[in-house]
Amino acid sequence: MRRIWGMLVWVDWYSRVLGFKLLGTIVHIKRSEMPDDGIFKIYPESLQEVKLAKMVTGNGVGFEIFEFINPKFEDANVFEYHKRGFFHMCITDPNPEELAAKFVAEGGKRVGRTTDPSGKGEITCLYLADPWGNIVEVLDVGFEFMGLRSAL
Image (cartoon, rainbow, N blue to C red):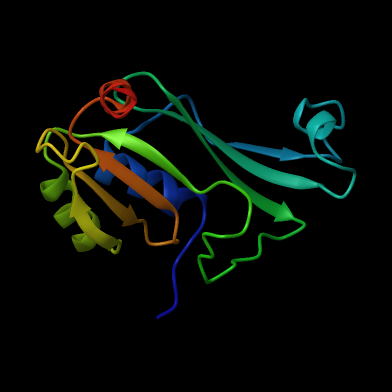
């Protein structure tokens, strides 16, 4: 199966499935036109062109999507959890199973089984993968609650 990807596809998917909102517009930044842009102070000289979408979650957390144009983005195709780098993000949803069904209907997939990290029937936790292989943990409680419960 060939995955369709690109900035517009990603922004649309995260808006429809998770309810994230695009802040402003998608920005297309080229070193040749804006050599002093802040992004070129962060990334090496090899970065020449990038698209950036700034989104916000329902509780105000920032979510940025980058599409590297030059050099071109290379899809890893295989998720390897044991290699360093960003592993997953965690969101809160009152009904993780319904969200999981929506993920699957929109081209994502479930990863593993639903679990209760507290072991006390207090928390529903499951993992999903978006159509591009990014892992999203879904809890039915706030992350602070889960962290507090595991600390006790």
